[in-house]
Length: 175
Image (cartoon, rainbow, N blue to C red; front, top):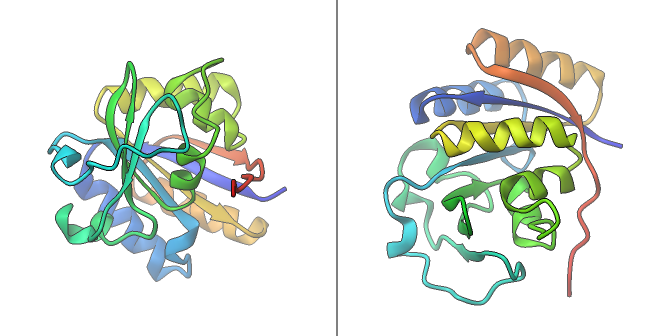
């Protein structure tokens, strides 16, 4: 099972600095995930009501430039509305999880999707609370122990809080 390093940053600038550092240290865009509240109104460009998740609305962003900065250029970026949580922006592998069946009614919301990614329930609920409070979850997907250690060191250098190693569940793709 692959593992990820996940943690919380407070601002978009901190998130962009960490993403730049991860890229500079050999992590590819498709290995980096971000999840954050949409405070600036992606609803203006997220009108697609077709969704794979009956609990939320998912829409791909036609151009990352609408969000601006490094986060706006991340792979697989899109908007999602989670009932009880509100509008979110997701990028990277976490977007595939959120747009799949992982946004479940049993646990619900962000925590359900994070549990679907292999994050333990306690940590998933803690991360959901932090995201609801306006923080940003960043995760980097690692292929080996050296990458895990390198990612954790970068997280510490960038003052990331709530750093955890998490196992990744495989995401089933729907037809």
